[in-house]
Picture 1 (tube, rainbow, N blue to C red):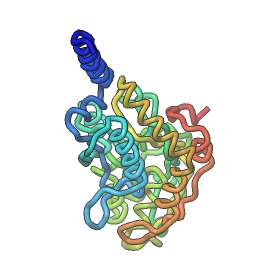
Picture 2 (cartoon, one colour):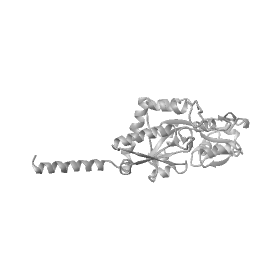
Picture 3 (spheres, rainbow, N blue to C red):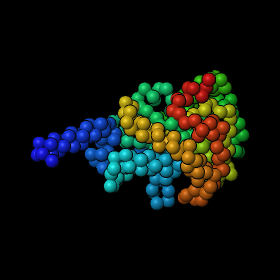
Length: 301
């Protein structure tokens, strides 16, 4: 081959490589350059994201996020991808995603229209009802039994707003007490500093199953809201969003997501080997067939 043609071929090769590099942006570029992806994890969001007996993050959403991390590694052709875990709370989870500290928030976050102004969401992987946990001995059955009583919820969640806006809760004067995380909120109920803890029913079921005396508690009352729960990522990052969406949709349509649900909601889970026996809801079955990232507001129509 003529030397000029060899030089041209080399230049074209370099140009192609440069073009590929330019094509990767946002989170994928960050991960490519650092070799690290950071997962935001919750410490007590049973069984979506929590710490096991060895203080390692485990759960339904942790498993899904690990599948997404595998897809990122393959997409970027990385020989090694380090997984970093960053504990988040209901209060700081959105800021930590927005500012780039966390790449994927693998917790128990409701996808709603207000949050979509700040962040993006993967297709919904869980649907929950917001209800309340009480001690059976209290005799509390619904919102209208809460007048003048302390009610616990977790800082940074939407539970109290839902109670205030619900038909049964509009005219009830209850006292709000806040836990820093779900375990802290449940402790308030356990130690009688609150008569009820209002939260997603799956989280309540997980906390009750792990309590010292599970039979002392019940989940009661009308459903305050149907909440789509999803993995959270940065907004305005179409390449990463497409990869995340494709991964979740593939998991759903292949049946793998259904297997993960069975693993975490219908079989014994660590650390105590408790089985939550939490059957898949009809809305989630529909989402398994047709995954989407529609916000909570669409579930009210």
